[in-house]
Length: 330
Image 1 (cartoon, helix red, strand yellow):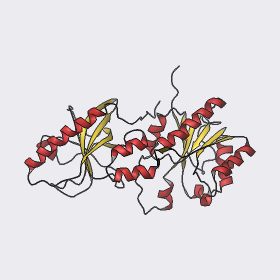
Image 2 (tube, rainbow, N blue to C red):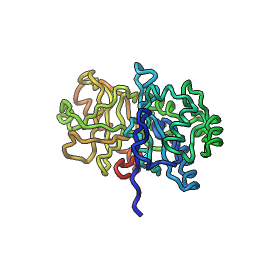
Image 3 (cartoon, rainbow, N blue to C red):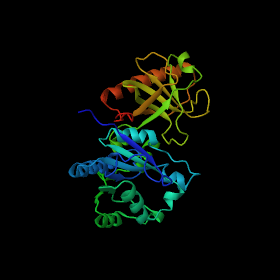
Image 4 (spheres, helix red, strand yellow):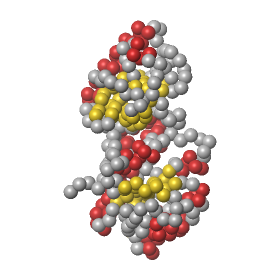
């Protein structure tokens, strides 16, 4: 039996009703799902289990833009996953779909009981809800998991509350992953996420200096709020359905200029034109921080060594790549 497409509903309170009722009656896992890490996947697993028991679809209810960006617009948010990346990860997680609610002033003003009434009951007729132990919602964040549990008993929908997920004595959270990436510890980020952290971007034209050095690079400009530590990384790159190993520099190129931050990727065993193509770049291992070399020859020798070290690191993890789905029929 062919797999059904992953359904994405983009909704907001200004709409009188959802654009489709394809997810009506679903079990909804609710949260930001920033990174879709191992803790989030515990919620997804609980939603899928409840949905199977009830014979209903399983979906997530998430919010865009990130609520922190709404409440503090002058403070850039280092997004582990933008909306597209988040949905691609969710599409690969065995769900039937996702509801993306616009987080705006109208939603921020909604009282907790109104959120239950207007969104969970009236709009989506949820048969079940799954939330984390620390989930709060509604104006002033007064809605709690316990409040939701009580409302579910009154309204006839099941509520599952998922405890914290830990690795050893460390609780898995989006903040802990950001901290790891800020330190360049992509191996720690991988452990917490359950897969390598990745960034997606379109290849743009650079100054062609890498080509002159024997290291032609595909250049991508990441979100200025990206908090990844500047340095050299072993990466695995997705180009459509194909995977390529490589080495990447993220930073300001101290040998030549200190301009805009750029991600420069050298793909091993690849030749071809990548301009305008979208790449998924998974960060597998840290190699070193940025350096300023005395001569170009010293730089090239170090790039040779970086490539060797990247090949070794990638050889230890031949299958490391994020589980990202296709939004058009995932």
